[in-house]
Image (tube, rainbow, N blue to C red):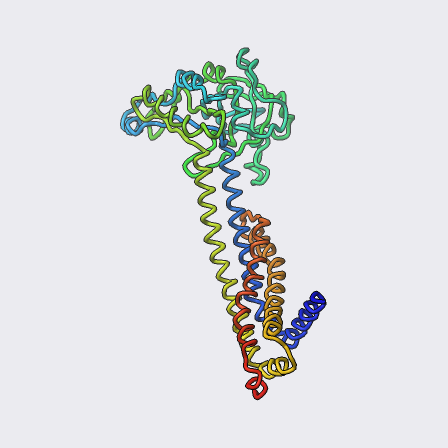
Length: 433
């Protein structure tokens, strides 16, 4: 009985609202766009968060990155003195010391040297990177073909290399002259490239993406060619030559960087502090930098939470405005229907029935507006993603939250007009013209 009465009241509420279609539509607009804006803004915030976290994840959440950094004194000396050799950076001994730390699970070392590579008359600027086999598990990139370097390559001092897709095939989204990779038009695996008088056989191709996150950068690059670390030392030496503005400068760097994998996330920050402390004992000058991606990850997550609160609050204002619009229209409706209310009270309608009737009408308005907003929100997010080159992700909680708020808005802002209608004096209401 109660259920059939509720359904009858809902049908009556819908019928009443349909008598003023334009007014009902305009009333719903506030809730509609409020719900849509909540979903769209949270989708933009979630998309930005996931994009930032993906970039940080490339650095490795359990990794600690140690880079060689040229001291300021060496920079000044190299610009004022010719034939100056700057000696700085990480040492092989540093890597061995780090390997002894109980919280360090795995260690990868690398050093780099920029040089031109040649193949059948084609040439390309490359960054020859000497690495240990652990590199490919700590700086993880998809293997597109062949294999990566292994312990046998190190032990045998093999003249082999692993290229990035960019160095082998070029950038397929760029112009023709840019996308011509060093080995375009030929089978990559098994080919040999010439670098500074040395031939290296290509044994594998990986996808490499260089990325910058805050002050940190991934240790790999699109123009990298990876070779065994001991081969790199033997063939290119540890002195890097650079000619600038008529001067000839030399740099001697044993290792350009070390990537250390820590056994658990809980140990990352404490291990990073231990690494800083240990390096400070053996390096008089600040010629190194220790980066902790996990710290940046936590900062990014905290920042995105604050950003989502701000975006949600701004969008929530639209729902508030929509609720005020509903209250305004329902108050006007009470005035218009004063005589109708008086008649209903005179024939026995109770106050709670009047309240229920007006609340049903406001909830129908807010729910209908909310449902339209649920469809409109993801559509707006899709347009932003397509035309603003931004990643948007619609989280399920944003749909539940925005629709739930729209229902609450209808109840809250419809209560006062409903109570006002129920408290009208029946005799005065009947006299109303």
